[in-house]
Length: 129
Image (cartoon, rainbow, N blue to C red):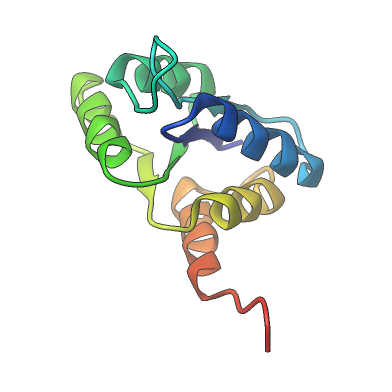
């Protein structure tokens, strides 16, 4: 199964997104919190992201969901520090909708690339017609 990491500038926000999306889980796979900083200020840190990636990686790939700005930069830095492993992807999707799509669509046999595509399609989800 593909592991997921949520990187938000607020650790509590990432945790609530994880809690909410876990309601959609059909199978057992890690959804890890890579958000926040080592202090109580808003922000992100590469080491926190690295630790979350390592917890989420079960060998089939990891999708990383970011909110904005430095969460993207620090995630890219974390991936570089890890040696840019294969099957490790930053997902270009709305944070909440993207994570929910990935949790709901994650099943045995799906590839990280396929799940990334499903998650990124959440950009086109129309809520109100």
